[in-house]
Length: 113
Length: 109
Image 1 (cartoon, each protein chain N blue to C red):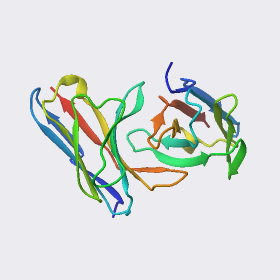
Image 2 (cartoon, rainbow over the protein chains, first blue to last red):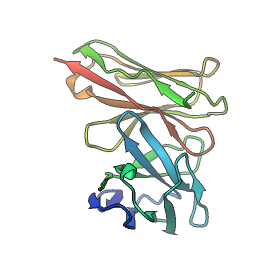
Image 3 (cartoon, helix red, strand yellow):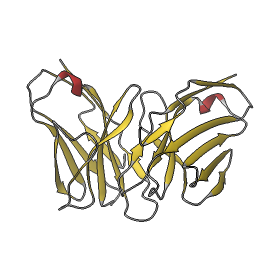
Image 4 (cartoon, each protein chain N blue to C red):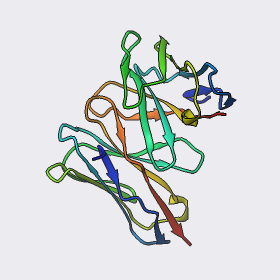
C-alpha cells in the first residue's frame, strides 16, 4: 500500500464549483504539505501543517483553504474553482527535525473548465 | 529574484558521461538542501540531501554545497538512460520548502 495517497487522481470540473482534494498518509509523519505544479514553474507551496492544530500559508494560498482533520489527513479545498487553478497537485509529508525531507503522494490532476 | 533558481535546460548528455546540475538560492538562512528526481507523470522522489559545506557522495550521485556562494549542485557520474528525468532543487529556509523550476536531463544511449 502507498504511504501517501491522494484522492481523486484526476478531476475535471467547471468554473465556480467547490472542489476538495484529499490526502492520507500512513507514514506517521506530523508535517503535511500541499503543492501545485505548473509547467516551467516547478512546485509551489500552497499550505502546510506541522501538526493537527497548526496551519500555515505558503507562497500561493489565495483561492485555497485547507483542513487538517487528523494527523494522517490533510485536505485542500478550492472554494470557487477558476481555470488558472488547473494544475497538478501534490500532497507531501515530512518529519520534524534538522533535515525535513519530504515524501510525495502520486498527485491529483485537476482541470477547471 | 526567485528564491531557488536552476539552469533551465534541457540538458542532454551521452550515456556514460557526467551530468552537472546547478542551483542557487537566495535565503542565507537555509539549512538543508535537497535534490529530487521526477519522472514524467510521476511524483518527485528524494535522491540526495546535504546540509554541510562540501561534497556528499551516494553511489553515482554527488551533491556539492557552498553556503558562502549560495550554490548547490548535483553531479551524476556514468549517466544512464534511466537517469533521464527532471531534477528539482529544493531548499528548506524556514521549515517549509522552496523548489526550483527543475532541469530536464536527457541521457542519450
